[in-house]
Length: 146
Image 1: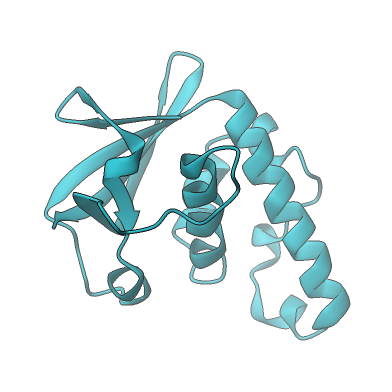
Image 2: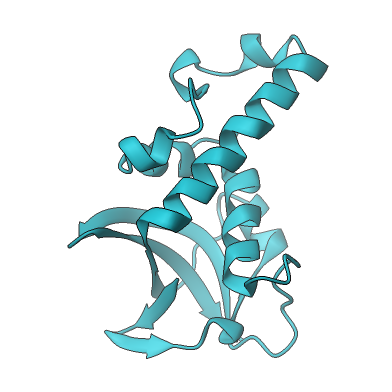
């Protein structure tokens, strides 16, 4: 994963999550940061969403009533096969919190720990858009500078 600010690469350790801002749909970041995801990262995100949906269905039968059926993944390759669907899931109140957690873990790397906001210069507040770039995909997030 790579991050960019105004077409310049930004170290991932300078990006954190504004957890309060992320949960408040009225909080909008004033600076856009782009995260470039490759096919392997999309695969990991898809597998995570699929596993989480299976768990939710097993534990909470009402989950099926609360979620638009098009937002229940049918297999773990959902974002590998159809990367553009990730934008729809990111915009969903049901999935956005889980997805940002997975993305933040991917940003942290092999340690699997949630990205700390300590030392972060930019905090992600909201999802803006998603677009293809060669064989990768760009997720754009509104951020605030700390």
